[in-house]
Image (cartoon, rainbow, N blue to C red; front, side, top):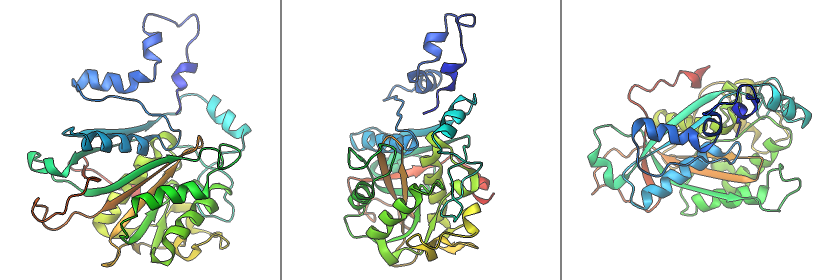
Length: 320
């Protein structure tokens, strides 16, 4: 999403590496080169939905027969120019205040997030224990259902979520995109409310803790939700604690002043929602690992893959 390096060079600094070094395809290409990875290697830009779009792409590759895949999201702010442009568009503020009475734009953040995925059929080939089950992920576009293009669509967000949850499984917790904008937050929560209603125990928004990491944001929320399904607990979303906007639908589920028991026996699945200002929506469903992960014990569907995170992964960022 942010290619600040393209704005950093001029005629004097241009050299033999400038053309290749500023190509977005080189972001993933250099990783594949350094690690000698010979599978699919692509850069995906769907603005703030980029990282979760990449996870959707990896999941599709696994279902086509790939043995494993890595999804990475990264956001680096190298120059003030994009910030200036976003200020002109009245999109940003000093920090994210999701579901807040004074929400007035999102705060920009930097970060990198990565997950490794393997299909369930290949789980016996890995020596690394998985953390959770990715049990469905879907992506769509708003098309021309709203105007301007940067405005989220209630109907298309609902369609995206409904596709993932069409089997009737109950959702106990939802990690929202939740940027803290007066337009986006009510639209997203209405979409969530129309699909899930009162079955939701709590809604979270990591951006209230770490700000909006833009192209990495979807995967940051995904990793947080893995922790949620492991511990059955949703932690408060920072600035969203104070003076919540009670006019927003499902407001009681948003007012987290302390850790919330996120999942129940009758609703042990969780969802993560993400959308970009170019009109892309992505939604993923995550389940806790079953106690018995043998192939005989787990009913495998076409949309299920295991999620791995690096050994010793530290979730401290979730508690800031």
